[in-house]
Amino acid sequence: MLATTPGAWLSSAGATFLLIALAEIGDKSQLVCMTLAARHRGLPVILGATAAFSILNLLAVLFGAAIAAWLPEWVVTLAVGILFASFGISALRYTEEDEDEQIEEKPGHGIFATTFLLIFLAEFGDKTQIAVAGLGSTNNTTAVWLGGTLALACTSVLGAIAGRKLLHKLPLLWIHRISGAFFLILAVLAFAQLLLKQA
Image (cartoon, one colour):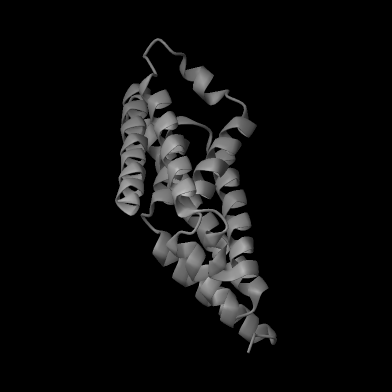
């Protein structure tokens, strides 16, 4: 039976928040936020991630675990791999001659869109979305959506803060190299997963 009393609603939201936050700490989406925030302004990164998680969680509570079946898994995996690879190559092409100010002054909507796409595709059908779907099927859907979205927004904020701290400790060139390598590793893992599933 779905929660209807205020106490039960808060209990569902709180339980969802705790479960999703613990599951997401150190996960790839938090690392993506950290990496992006080390190279760009933090606010568009946080907003992009939060928007992606809001939609993913809404889809999860509305349609349950079946959301992952909307598209063939190999299509999503291929899109993730291509997106990670292109972002990694772009980061590795950065040179010391590039102006630091140019990185900071990039339009916020561009970073927002990049973060949104990376998070949305990487987390589509991921364990946290499936967990939200499962919780939404047995608890109040709005409580589960709010708890899950707040949890993922908080882990994104923590990742962005860590990324900004990294910016002050490492030269920008090295941040680009590290983030480029990180995204290429994620791309290789995505393509490997695709090949294994097709075999």
